[in-house]
Structure formats: C-alpha cells, structure tokens
Image (cartoon, rainbow, N blue to C red):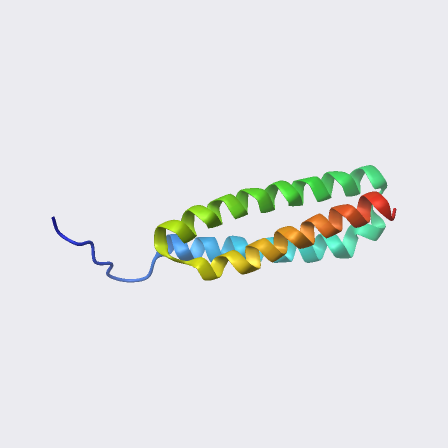
Length: 94
C-alpha cells in the first residue's frame, strides 16, 4: 500500500479557515446590531448564529480528528460560547 503525499496547500483547510473568520464577523455584527433589533428578530438572529456555530463545531471535530488540526477547536469553541452569551443576553436582559 502506498502512502498519500500532498503536493501543495490543502484547499479544504483554507475554506474552513474562511468559515471561522466569517463566523467571528457574523458574531461581531450580531453583537453590534443587537440593540437596534426588536426582541423577536434578535432571537431569530441569535438562534441562526447558534445553529451556524453548532454546524461549524461539528465540522471542526471531523476535521480535527481526521487531519490532526486540533488548534482549530479553540476559536470555534470560543465563538460558540460567545454565541451562547449573545443569546443569553438577548433573552434575559432585553
């Protein structure tokens, strides 16, 4: 059996890093515009951010297990916690 050797950068890794950056941009925009939204729209935005983060965490665990990219878990997990804080802020303090 022959070993697989990669020639060049991993494109999937690059797209995954872009998804993480987009996640942080969406969290920042959600936090910035949360004061201007009504309660129901704020809940919808927070739930969508939580779902996006849950999918990203699932992809991250698949990716980290398969390609030994464990360093990707930290920003994604922290972003998921921040989305939960954003949701809690929207529900309890608005």
